[in-house]
Image (cartoon, rainbow, N blue to C red; front, side, top):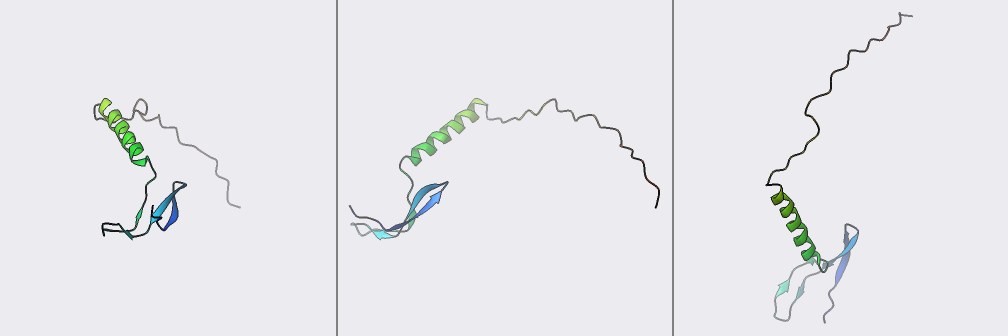
Length: 86
């Protein structure tokens, strides 16, 4: 197995290796790229399916209820005594 040179970066606190360009046995050149963690594609797919499921169950509509919809009653003006000039 050929070892690849790379630098370790972090995304979200987890190391994500940066793979430098290299050539395959077939002569194909591969450019520099990040290598995703094993299983990350599956996790992103499952998260996307959950989002679509929740959106579908909601009938495609998103509503946010923040109460009765009425503004609170206004308060009266505050009156403070004014001191005379010194």
